[in-house]
Image 1: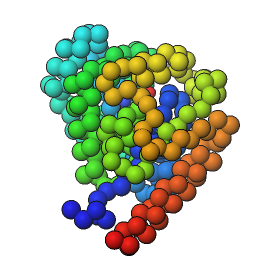
Image 2 (image 1 turned 135 degrees about the vertical axis):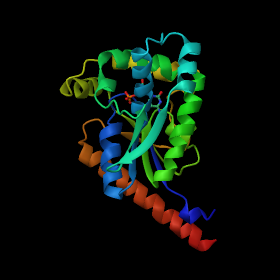
Image 3 (image 1 turned 180 degrees about the horizontal axis):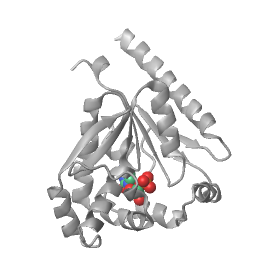
Image 4 (image 1 turned 30 degrees about the vertical axis):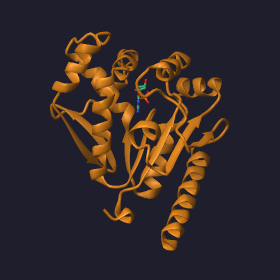
Length: 225
Ligand code: DC
């Protein structure tokens, strides 16, 4: 395949409430790339397990559910959606019960393999801005466009409170960082963006400038070869 025609993937990883979703959406819109929220995919599986009364502590049962469920990827208004049995559980995946269950399904190796495969299949929609916890390390380790977002814990807690969500962010980050399968970590070659005290406008403009700079470098490199 001609590398120039391969879709571009901007990978945005980071801690909870570090602004991944807001910034990834802004960057995707500015670049006219497709936005992919991979956390929503893990949440969808957690919701599905709760619906089907599958014990999320039981890795084998969760892995079996992940093999069995009937899903479909679609792209609506520039964003990817994961449908289950033709349904998009947009609101249902944001409840506290799902937030509690999601780290338990996210640590199952079979689930991570399924997610990686499904997330890579999003390339069929074109250029992507994909946010998550393991995009630059595990899903698209080959991309040149990797960002790792973080902000001081107190500020991240304030952001969640402003969104009307009470959550133990420290616990969530620990669960995400300490699991054996594809833990949250800074991807090799990622640009670290500590956005404490910044508005999403400032952070996203900074990321966009970096993407443009890397794209120009890449064009120049390819012109030389
Ligand atoms: O970003 P979020 O809060 O919607 O993510 C929900 C959970 O899914 C989070 O606890 C970690 C997990 N997750 C993951 O393990 N890998 C990803 N690429 C995205 C999310």
